[in-house]
Length: 604
Image (cartoon, rainbow, N blue to C red; front, top):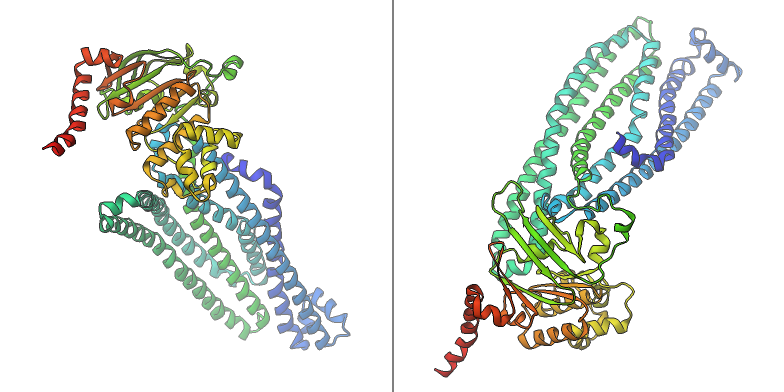
């Protein structure tokens, strides 16, 4: 409860006034049957007024002991009561909605902020679809429960207690019918709730899977179509959808069965009351108006129990969703600023020197195999370093440690001679520009995307950096230029154009460390050469790390690092490695042969 009270306190007036307004409606519901009984027993048959309670005779006397004015007065009272009940009901619904919507909005905001603090490894523990479900569907389940709770938390108990008191005071003997009905109803509700709770938790898991399937398909729709895998994806979606349907039906069957069963108990009790109460009316020990009111109170008692059962059903689903939300909120980010001194918090990347000291890393901490094993490396400031090696040898993982996307399991990573843990995450990453393997753009204009690098950049600076990235030419060819709208993920530009836009975005940060992770693979060699030339002339004060598959991309670097199986197997200039490193020679020769083979084919 302490967790959720955080989202209640800012809107405590809504949480207070909502139930109080519902109590107004409950009081009216208690009064209406009694007023109707007065009309039936004493208004229609005024001769019975001598048997009426003192307060009824007093009201009757106000109208000169005339039946018609008495009936009209009671009816006017019922109309006024109905109006007050309506005000109470509308007010309760209004405040309940305000409270639940604000509760959900703040919770959703906290969830989103929490996810933003996650490291890559934290995010890896959840699927994207699961996180989306938790931020949307699960929060909605809690919102619905809060809304129902505020409407029913006082209304249902108030109606139950009030109607029970009225029934007992009217006829204690007839009230004994409830001694049979209520225990049976309680046993039934316990069985229903115990069956439904685990099913709702499973249903939310199936929603996760469905969302993940849809998200994955829509994100990779071009790959799906290029491999003509629509049928496979349809079958996968159909399977996930069928699982959700079956699980949902399993959960809903309980609720479907509950409502008719509740009505059965209600009708059976009403029949029993009419049977025994009718006997009392015939022998004169109970008036027909009181019997009518008593039946109404019995119906209210059973209706309030039905409300409680529905509230418990909503609660069981909300508890399942609440646990899933709590998992996200309780997740401890693997990477955080921790406890930093004032000096550490103010520290920024100044010259871009990088050093790895005996660094090792595993993605799966219980695995014996290391992705990086004993890496020791120093990269001088303002230098250009190329990293080359086979796929999966740890190149991307190595540079990810610099920006603390992951933390090393062993050893130290230093920037400017200081352990990266002694930088704030913001200042460390602010000094590093990265162009990742997966070039991601966002919906919006080209200019909006480039301003991710520097929100305050002038149009001149944007054009300048786009020129260095060899992107200004094709941007200017668009009708809308830099205001051209990009689709989600930049799906309306080519792969090479996307890469150049991502490079321009990184350059706008004017970083002291620039990391290019195979970021020119979709660019022709001539354009790539012009980009490298711009790096040398315009970014001479920045440390540049270029990860590449093509030797031509790194051969002009001050130093080239060769990696294999998570280890550094060679280090030096292009000429030095070509003369002394077997792996580098093999990569170079295979690429040269591949480049020359088309020419041989043409000559032949």
